[in-house]
Amino acid sequence: MKNESSISKAQSYVDIGEFWDTHDLADYCDRTEPAEFEVDVLSEITYYALDRKLSEDVRSLARKRGVSADTLLNLWVQEKLQ
Image (cartoon, rainbow, N blue to C red; front, side, top):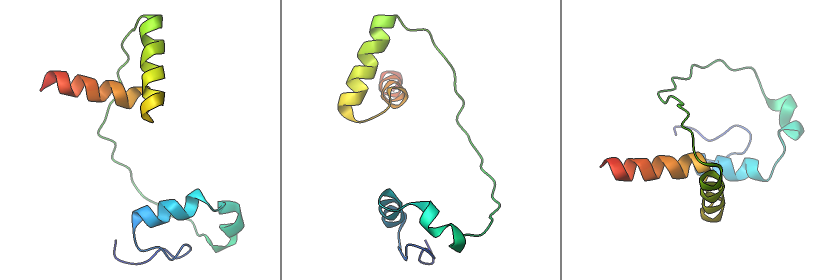
């Protein structure tokens, strides 16, 4: 990151995230300006059927680990394919 954030004065993306975790954008709306940018999303979502009980177990375990069920399943599949 080249410069500090204009609102938070943070100098890293982590610090910017921490700032916005504790502040409301509505309080700073008058200090913002329109921005244009492109997003190049390389991932693709594909759905696979899971047994209901299995799906509930995955969601429960993901919650305990502090990640989404999608993330947990992606990690497991990556491990198995390596």
